[in-house]
Length: 509
Ligand SMILES: Cc1cc2nc3c(=O)[nH]c(=O)nc-3n(C[C@H](O)[C@H](O)[C@H](O)COP(=O)(O)OP(=O)(O)OC[C@H]3O[C@@H](n4cnc5c(N)ncnc54)[C@H](O)[C@@H]3O)c2cc1C
Image 1: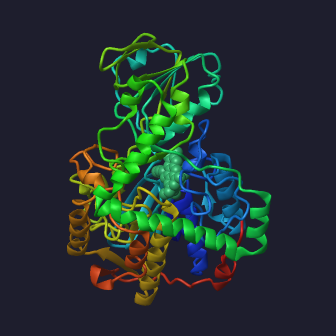
Image 2 (image 1 turned 90 degrees about the vertical axis):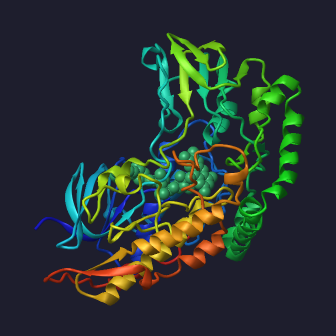
Image 3 (image 1 turned 30 degrees about the vertical axis):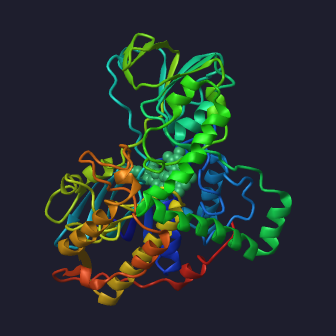
């Protein structure tokens, strides 16, 4: 028999590393993390573009069980977040479990043996349970632009920044005005000869209150950990209070919209440019972006805003949908990710021999954001409708880790060889409730299209409630929502390893 593990975790970003810490805390050491890249970090390894930083304050955008009293800035940069995740892997003893350069190519549910057969670029294995933490924003999306193949210059995506290419003195085109692009534009503007930004729809942008966290604050957070916890609690609470405006009363966002308009007026004196930068949809419909240097960068004389999408490339000339032309030496695509059509779904084959992608062809849905009907003992971290518009994804990840832990406890209670299969009726009920609540939200009523919506226009990405509510709803597994599957013959026992649990308590990193 080939190699077998109790749990295979896919991905070594916040989700996968968090799952691993939680597994050890539960006393489970028979697990492996399969990661396609050659280091941990996920989002924070892949996105190394100039200016890359979190847009949720660091003291909230970090694990509750791995506090970092030494965050250097209120919104720390990518190198610090990546280093933090490396430290999490070390501090919690995760390295022996991690297999780098192991891309999961396929996984198939074996209904006889009740396990997953997993093929990776580094070999095959089987697992009782798969925890898929491949990330909602890990597959860059490049639009199909006629003529792009003939572009003589450099082309890359924001999540695959080419650090060997020197942008200094070059004519650079940035395509897209999402969260990454608005960090890149001010970061590269001082160095490039000319910067042309192609904007299909303007984002709403609010000032970012980024500042260095003082040595005194850091000392206080180290010496008196409750000050750090209080800071995190405050950051969390403020964001929880904002949720009802997004989910139930979009009209209340009007006040924030006027602040965002004032932000444009403060930085942009040219009325024509200000008009191009003012969105026509309700604030919050697309993610509200935070930046204090984006508008000032656009006001610089060598930066041009083309208020139209890129339509075609003719040699080194970029042509916008409105006919505007700009010549460039390099094109940077800030065009987002495959969110509602994630490639991993093509690689998962469930109990009925169907891929997850096929199962989800009319829209992604998962019970409590985690499990899918027809895919026993498989769960995803940051699954459908678990994304947030205004708070830290780590809160949602930690809720899902509670759910994962209870799922494994339930399997232990069942004993022997068993699997849990989400009942289609339970998944359907959950999804109907989520979608019914979605109707009132600003994401549905705000008059925009966004990457939150799938090809059918359904919002299958965002959670329409508070993070506190999601925490309550994922605290334990409701066994009435699952069917218990039993293997015919043979047992494979699991002995929880309490020594592993001891190694995985809270630790400052
Ligand atoms: C630029 C940027 C900024 C962001 N800022 C914030 C923020 O400020 N606040 C916030 O809450 N969220 C933010 N996010 C969202 C962010 O993605 C999540 O917060 C979080 O990092 C997701 O963690 P994850 O582990 O689920 O996914 P990821 O970090 O994407 O990790 C997934 C991992 O799975 C691996 N993988 C994928 N497919 C396979 C496969 N087939 N086989 C093996 N391994 C595979 C990938 O290589 C990757 O390492 C940001 C996202 C981006 C792109």
